[in-house]
Amino acid sequence: MAIISEGINGGFTGKAGSVVGYNRMGKWIIRGLPRAKKKNRRVSAGQQASRSVFTKMQYFLSPIVPFIRVGFNMESRSRQITAHNAAKSYNMLNAFTPEGEIDYSKVLVSFGKLPGALAATLETDDAGLHFSWNDNSKEKDASSDDQVMLLAYNVAKKGTYWMLSGARRKVGKETLKVGKSDKPKVLHTYIAFISDDRQRISMSTYLGEIVY
Image 1 (cartoon, rainbow, N blue to C red):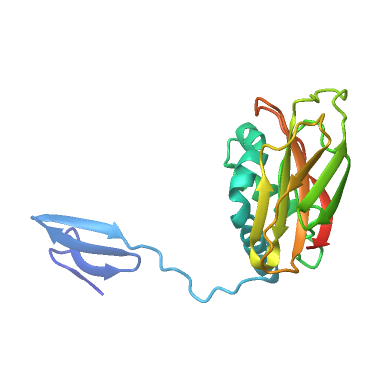
Image 2: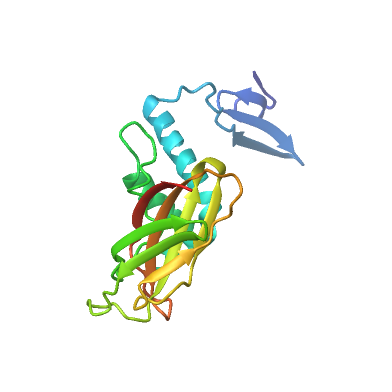
C-alpha cells in the first residue's frame, strides 16, 4: 500500500502496483519494481532432449580439446568462433542418432577442404595401431608434404591417444602408440591430413571401432 504525503499533487511512499515511491533528500522518487522470476517452469521434452545432446557432446569433446583446436582451426576462423564451439555445433547437428545417442562414425574431429586419406586402413599389434593410406598427392590441393593426424579415443574411460604432426602423405603409413594398461579397451579411430604450413586441413575419416 502507498501513502500520499502532500495531497493529490504530492509524492507518495510505499508500493503501488508495479512501482514504489519514496522521498530522498527532499525529492520524491518513483521507480519500477523488477519483474518477478517465474519459478517451477516446466521443461518440455524437446528442451530436455536438446540439453541431453549438448551434455553428451560436451562430455565427448572435453578430453580431445587440443586435437579439436587444430582440427577445427580453419573453420573457427571463418566463422569467428572458437574451434571447440565450431566442433560442438557441427557434431550436435550431424552426429546423433534419432534416439539421441552419438554416432561415432559421423563425428568429425577435423573440418576443412584439403583432400583426406585415400583408402585408409588400420591394423593392430603389440607395437600399437598401424594406419596406412594411398598416396593421393596428385589430387587437386593435396601435397606430398601434408602430414597425417591420428586419433584413437576410448570414450568409456575418456582415454585419448593422438598425433598432430605425423608422417607425410607420400609415406603412406604411420604408427600410433597406445598405452597397454586397461586392456582390452574399445577405441574409436580417426585419420585426417593437415598442410605443412597449417593453413589447410581435411575432413576427418572414421576408421571404425576396435578392441585393443
